[in-house]
Each structure stands twice: as C-alpha cells, then as structure tokens.
Length: 95
Image (tube, rainbow, N blue to C red; front, side):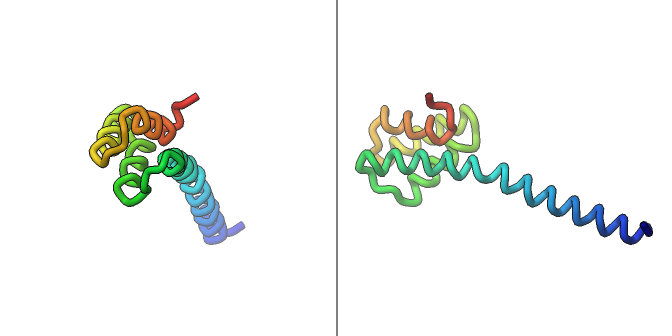
C-alpha cells in the first residue's frame, strides 16, 4: 500500500472513530436530561427552556451541576423534593 493510501485510510479510521465516540458520549447525557424533564412533566410542571436548561446542567456537571439544577428548578417554583429528584434523574444517580 502506498503512503498516500495509508494516510487516507488512517484519516478515514480517525474520522469514523471520532464520530462514533461523540455519539456514544452525547446519547447518555441527552437521555438523562429527558429523564429529568419527563419526571417533572409527569408531576404537572410546565417544561420549557428554563427546566430544560436546569436539567441539562444537572446531567453534565457532577455535584456542582446537582446544586445548580436544584436551585434553578426551585427558582421557577418546582418544590424542593421534586427538584432534587429530577436533578438526580438527570445525573443518572438515582436508584
């Protein structure tokens, strides 16, 4: 195989690997965010941009994200137990 063909093959393998990895990493965060929003919607809360934003932060930023998520939801009148549980669902740390 010529050097040019090897470089093309290596580039394609790298591109496929990067694309696959980005999909694998993005999917769980999205699913966790939807767990949070679905939980709140089932409890009768209106799910708009502020709820989605809080749930998204809860899904991505560890302990700091949990605090920010819970505080953000409580600021828009989600009661404390619902906010805490929804943010735990976003972080996939509920059992």
